[in-house]
Image (cartoon, rainbow, N blue to C red; front, side, top):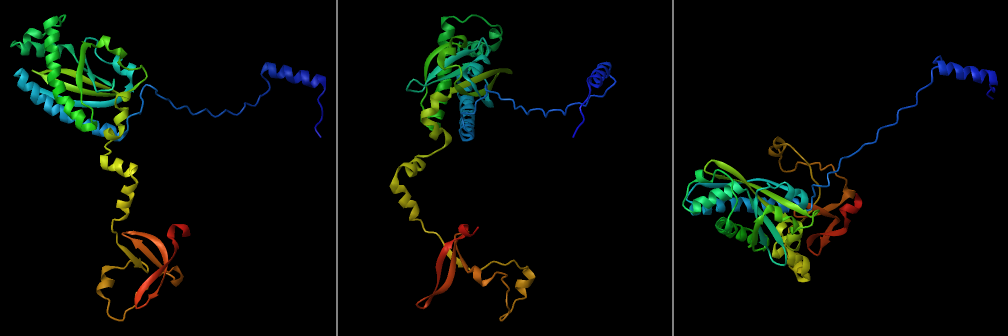
Length: 320
């Protein structure tokens, strides 16, 4: 039983602690909480398969667009895919250059994409379409009616190559809806809509510019399976009950296997008639029935009339 302290002893202890003469034991340090940083501006709505197929499709577009514009502008034009990323619509749109020109692409059913190009490239292409040189388009200027008309013609050449690519990719034919400065296209999708950002570089007469395609997830949600690479045959197998019967009618190889043993090649070459091979497997384990390369059933060996046979006793996975 602990002894109680007098009032004088308690007062003396308090005074000593106040003067620093008493060591006060420190409390054990509390373990710091583990915090994980979450970046909600980078959604993951598009799957890896959708990104990979989109990347291959846009690489095809870059090759065809390079050929088409080189012929139209009578100058060497090179498109190159730089990156694919996922952002919210507001973040993706805010990252576009302020002087960029955007064309809204209609994909049917109210679905819209946004394709943008930096103004210096557009002005240079307009000068080349008019028969001029790239030097006359070095400085930025305000676009007039003729500039907008020729810019629309430039984007028509690009969309004529982009449309078939997306049609083959997921069945979405694209057409030009309208041409606007990017500052007027922020309303095309909700601010938090997951958006696939396809960044490309275009090089014209040693000048580099950025091309960006914004694909809101809502614009491709109806064809998400096709975008991921699901074929009509795959969807038929999922939706049609008769498709399962077709799969079940496929022939496979089944074999009865007593046991397996690993031996050296020298031991195999030294074998003679009458030699015994120890399988190192008890007789109680019976026989395994293998389908192709997978052991499926546990069996008991026997005979049916004049033929060898096995009787299935159960699944091997039940033994484990």
